[in-house]
Image 1 (cartoon, rainbow, N blue to C red):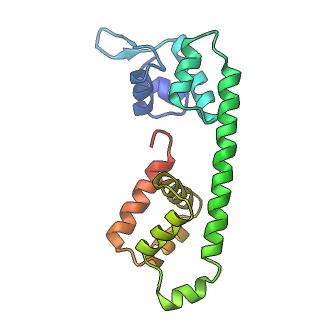
Image 2 (tube, rainbow, N blue to C red):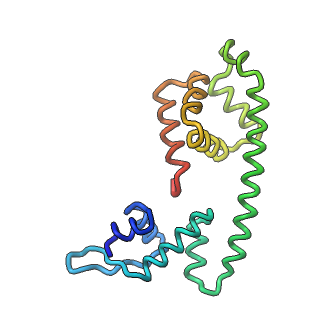
Image 3 (cartoon, helix red, strand yellow):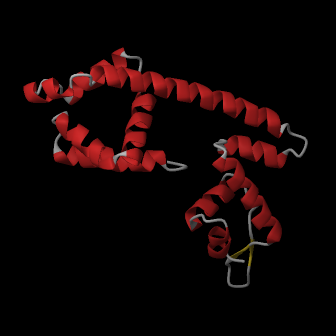
Length: 178
């Protein structure tokens, strides 16, 4: 099957399959007489395994390690990722509480127009947010409530072009491989 057919069989884009191949998750495809990539059933099965591990939130390097080393301890990798996810959830809950405290009196803040992007960023950093935390926060906000994300960015008096740019990278950042 071609890269297009392989991708469709797993619900992926062609570019994702090619990226996985470049990362070593798939073996380099043989070429047809017309120089098209050709994949077989083993490739399809391996790509399905990659998809299962990606759905579980594993990093591509961990997936490659599991697939390349048949004796690897996949359970240990999964357990480690579970612990990481628990820590991420805890951090997100902390962020949620910090934001709730900051937004407790939203109407008063809106009427006085006192919160700016710079003030908000300073507050978030003071609350322990790293750049990656803020990116993840924006990505989740954009994913779960895009209209409210737009409204919030406008509330911070961010120029329209910058609002559009933030929302665009937030959408990309939340997607796998983003």
